Image (cartoon, rainbow, N blue to C red):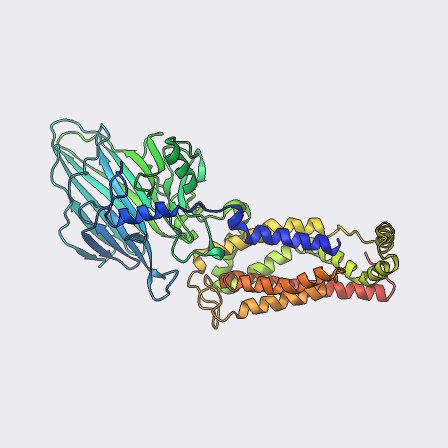
Length: 549
């Protein structure tokens, strides 16, 4: 194909790859919504809320080997969760905070007990804990919050934290001495504002918001924008499955997630057939809620019912979350290229098991993908090599025919026929590669496994940009070399664009995670070797008079 078409192809590929945020943006709240959410988190309601408000906390602190949790003693909400094995996105010297409840950010987990009429039994009741600090000194640590008896019911809310696990068991123990059977429902909720996660920028943007998995609806993302539309219209039209007998409901962001697990892996569902009701909404205090209403078994007079559920709150580590619940690994959001990204990450994970280093696993993965796609790329590069070989003849034709475009086109087509060149021969193979390369991009970009993972030397965290910008500079050099190996542009403006492209791309890659830049550098180096070899072979064939196929 001619150079102009090649440039269009690269422009389209770059637009798809780097313009993803413009094509599929994650909705962000208006400044007024952000302010309202911050005021509510600080304890100043922005508007009357139909849900339990977030008031200032009386903290009960729990420390394990993986997390530091803060539970509000009065409400029993999980108001703060710090992941001790991960550093902050904006400050490597601090630990990463997932749940938070301050003036800048609201993201909490809460649950409510409802009576048969749907009233919150705990609305005006305060829990108390026997102590204010707990530390894991074994396999488990349990925090029991007790509420005063109400309507003949004695209610305890129990958190259980386990060593080496991001699963938090939340259990209600309810003793009925009311003199009659009692039927209750539990509502498990995750609340957060619509602000983008800390450290997110233009080049590391992913979906943030509610997600649902059910056997009937599979994995569904429900953007904040859809919930805003429902809130403004007073309707409930956002598309997701609302009744289920299993699955999970939660919130996701880049690398991390929180989900209420309705059915553990190989375990029993806490829902009877179709009785769990999922509700995703924007509340009147402008917080977004992902909640599920679950019926408890009937509690006979004089008996006690224990009703537990698991909350996963932690990293989207595939090996971990795939063993928590069926298809929980889908929360590791690869977007519209999941069909490519998922198997590519599987292969990357297997390579890591062999070499023990994520950086070298990326190098090996790039080589393997390049080898698999060799037949396609070979056809494309041979087409470009032929065009490069006849470029002097093309220039001579342009000088001969000048502005007579019709004669010029006829002469070019005759030359292509004589040289057995199909100017479009490289288009289709290159287009077929785009989904694979974008899938590989997202497989690397979405993998929390690369967070804080070193490669060698100065690269100590593959999820962060190269601190010395060495990799982006190498990538720019490889692009300059590729430019030299490609057919030379016939138009001066196109020639200038080719010189600018490596600079523009390298500047963009200054902000990209090092793991992604490794992939592009290795891919470029392999492309250079392949293109050089093909160019040399074709030039040698032409010099000896052999027929170039």
